Image (cartoon, rainbow, N blue to C red):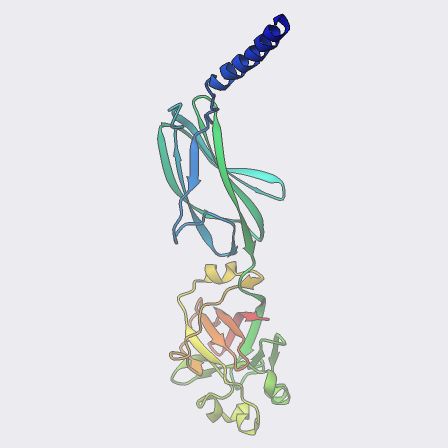
Length: 294
């Protein structure tokens, strides 16, 4: 009987211990970090994306104090890292429970950029969100030719130009390279200094050019532009040409003036710009610079 009592006592201890353990209140760990997220919507970038070199992104951020601790937000940063080199874009000291802001962000060149937005509260608790931006080259490769001097139809200077070959041709050489000639220059009695396509009707009335003997006359077309000399000069080795308006394009542009920039498109589809550098005092000799799509 005593042995049975001991067994029952031990059993009761175990049951009691189990009961006490099972009745103990559970503890839940509360994350004390503040909240942060990127704004969504069609205007915002909030996830990994690929853009061109001429593009920028709109990044919106919402942040708030932790719902349990209610600690004020004290600092907000945006850090962009590329090639393992971080750069701080935004470093703001704040004092608020709720924070939101928008940022237009552009990138210096081709590459992969990691954007990290981080918020820190008064207890030094922090949270961050991030995404990657891949920047790819846009536009086409172009080449720039300077110091191009051309004369009118009765001048010893060549009057014909090939953008592909980057050469000025005389009348005789142009006839031998008809398919390469993109435009020609002359000074007319009425319309003065003129750039024209080989198929232009007025150019074909100038007997000195001997265009009547040509079998290939490239149909280059021209548009005026509002481009400044500085904008022309700033174009590097790549460029994204605007749409060429074929409706307003002409086979020639006349009354040229120094500093003017002409937009052209060849029959082969190559686009480019002609900058009028100098018309000299004579007027029938011109100096150009040409940007030509490769």
